[in-house]
Length: 144
Image (cartoon, rainbow, N blue to C red; front, side, top):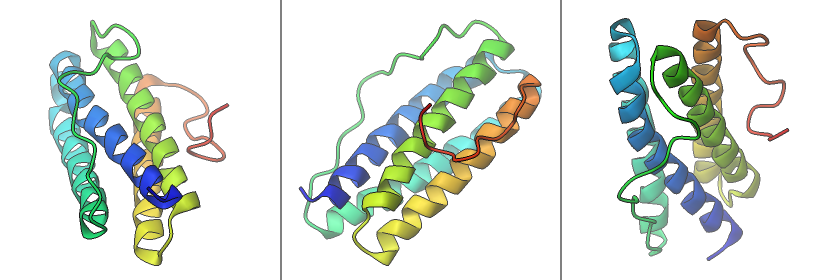
């Protein structure tokens, strides 16, 4: 696999995880957040499917989703659900930043840019909901 394909593959894995973990987030989130969570889950599915299309077009096997994913911390209430949602989005941003960095064509880099930007916005919205400051990272997708 090329570095670009490896980055796309890792982003697909991050999207599989995001879709699964948002199911857990939804189970514990405030009922007023359900529509927002459904929208975010759909965005992650669409991004995953677009990335799978990149690998399929290159004749490369995409990673399959795991049977289950463990949340980064226990989810027991709306606050812990929102905290996990922030981690989901930060992980997604990191994966898409790698696609942007290693992408070997404008279409692949565009997917990286789109995924990175969307994850950063979603993470900021969750941080606002949590009352965390700052709500944005200066360089989304870079782990500190």
